[in-house]
Image 1 (tube, one colour):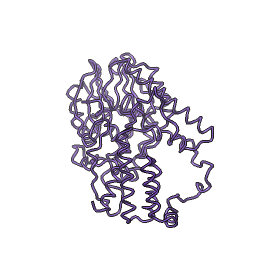
Image 2: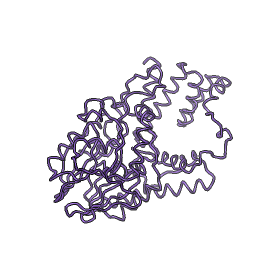
Image 3: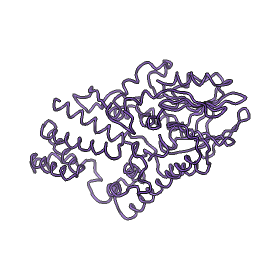
Image 4: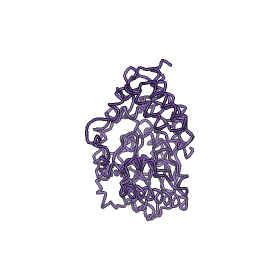
Length: 458
């Protein structure tokens, strides 16, 4: 299985509850979007739900099974421990492959996160005496995620066109069908700041909090004698190295840049000889592991320091999003999963600096878009459209987009206004595919283009 395919599988873990477009899409709410031609890291998006399920032997007692989310098993003289249990639609086969090599009873299941890709196969591998190990951060995240499901589902559906295919029979029990989000109560609750050490069959294990690329609810499992680190799906991100998706388009919470940097430093201090991530291929080369971690730490630290320099100088979030770029020595880091400018925006939001001390209107419950119809009426739709096309020709696509949104806000049925927006979005899509190739940006632009084409009757 290719590294790019495995790495990008993680991008779609949150899409499992999404099956329809947002209700505000009006008459187009049942429109099926086709993002099969959108490529992220060279992999067609539609193929990512068909990531092959394959088993490999990592060491004499450690096994790995691939899929949208990796699952692992460690054999000991007194039984086994399973790390992650996969997505519900792939978990039956993944757990079947693990059972073929597991020696003795499954004594523990370790869930490094409480996401869909962690809990999907619990029913297929848990025995009567199996204990589930989770951190408090994970258990506190799960009720939030269950409550947010209806809010998040249409947001994911606008990005992930293939999610309806996941509603096919998964082989899970009735209570877990098709893709519910049911909070889990662990048998062993680990306090994140303390950790947990235990021994099974003469093999030592340590549960450690690794709040990182997918939230502060991430954890890892460390085998100190073999120097093997199971990093969990959320600690590093879907590929090592890759810029973390800390400010997601989807609206995931608790992704904190400083926590991510601390986690990477903690992993560097461990100096793992083998790194077994929640996504991406197992890493068996210590030098590549360390080089990747150091690159991520240094690039992230640079951005973090630049954010605070800019805030201290009185700059607002939009200035910082435009100005902060990775310097040349870090610029080769892929931003196909998340963008530096989204991390900047999320980090500024987390400071509580929602009021920029610049425009008094920010204090009140109105968006600037609400006066667009008045401005377009005064200027004339034709004049606004003409100016937007001038900006497009000059390569100022963001400004052209703002004017295009203004004319659509003024008259959502105007073919001239819709045609302008279609052209601007298409130009932005071409740029996205030829620059950072960030999937969420590409998928969102394509979803809007599809809706506008339908509204124009084509």
